[in-house]
Length: 485
Image (tube, rainbow, N blue to C red; front, side, top):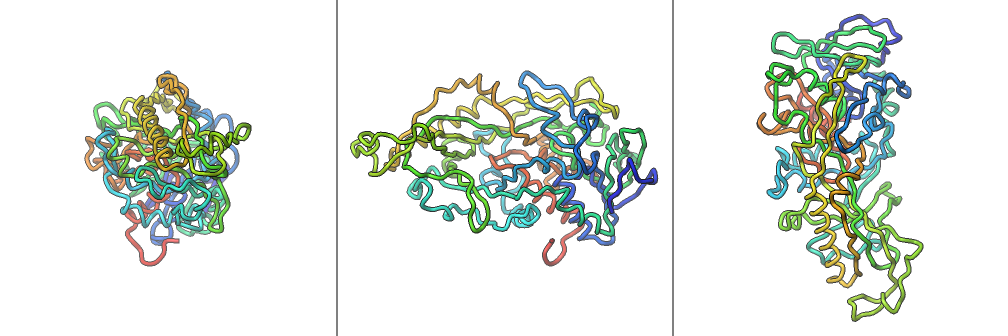
């Protein structure tokens, strides 16, 4: 059932077994998974937006302040059914095993569990994201990539692509057809409903001023990587009596993925590191350091692509065919190198609250995004080693760019991956939520968003968020036999 709080005559109060606040990919998948697993439960999903493009008044709820580094807060989020999947590019790949490890050279890195914990849920996430193959082996594209089989330092990996799935449109009929699932649109969360020290649900309000109470046995915030954090901060007094208690990490560790142009590469002609169509679906190859190299050399995870510089791609045969320079025979092109970097968890990079309030009375967000200089320094060392590996293997040469790291810190732009501000950890001293996504010291409140990532890898977060949604559904409802979809 789908109802619009602005249009339909709804009662002022509901009670349910599970309340999901937010109807982006996380909230939609969690709501449908719970409804299918527990037909005896009543599930309510509440979304602040509607089916269509958000109004100026709705987008204004996302306005906020930034620190010295600018961040486009209003335009990177969408307040409507399906959330930011409505402008998602569809890039997908699981996090690597090394991304879950605590790396001594990267402070505060590591998840409280390994890749094996999420692996079965990634398979479900693939189906929710409408990806037909879970084969991420680069052998699919052999012959079009650098031959790196003899390298112990670098390897090929793949991104796959969702169509991309617009979760609101794609699963709207499934939601409407679920007898024990109710989706309410145009209702904005304004505060927790408390029963003593217990979170008993959430109070909502429309922009027209109508109020709604939804009581729940389980409450899950799935409002996105920034809004989930802002909502908790608005209801967390400094004395620790709020809905989420008080954690040092509340709002800290904000990260987004960012890129780097480390230089140019002279390599064999015709290499193809662009998105391509394969019989298994669209995919894109990248070059990454091996887990052993990351551990032993103190690097972060990253990926590298090579883009032909068409105007000057052919290099003179006298140079490129000179065996005394270590080249193998054949034609060579000049490529521009680009990297996507794994950010270091930084407690000084954070979300807090400004003194300004929005139309719902909630304090607006203030984002102070800080990128560690060491992230660029490690990437520079990684690319320099890639250049040496090219020469060792007789595959080409590289020219390293002169990097102004302070300028890169100021100018680096994010890609709307809002990571890390409600990180998961075994202990409340180390994070805000437990490995099962329950807010520490609260038995009935959960967070489901990319904000719970304790470290980040270089992969886009959507596939991992959907995997966490399936896992949380299993934790709340209990495992069920057979397939989940």
